[in-house]
Length: 98
Image (cartoon, rainbow, N blue to C red; front, side):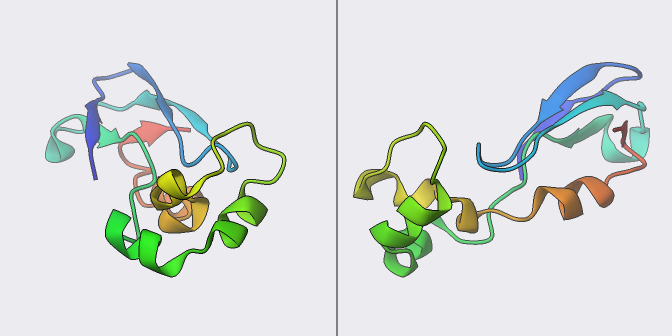
């Protein structure tokens, strides 16, 4: 999972895919985590795995009502390829204020 700098009271935006909620956070400056927190949910499927396992129809259903590309070239970015953002944020409650 990629990270962003998060010094004390630095503001950041943490998101998942555009169909899910996002968080605006404020850093707590936790040096044990190198003053950082995640800037996204992180993947549960590799890009290759998502392309093999997710159909275009599943991607269309998952992104219904969302303005985004809806073709086979972006199936690796489908929402089901990512971790639930709520769990990711709960796991880093010592790193930032939600």
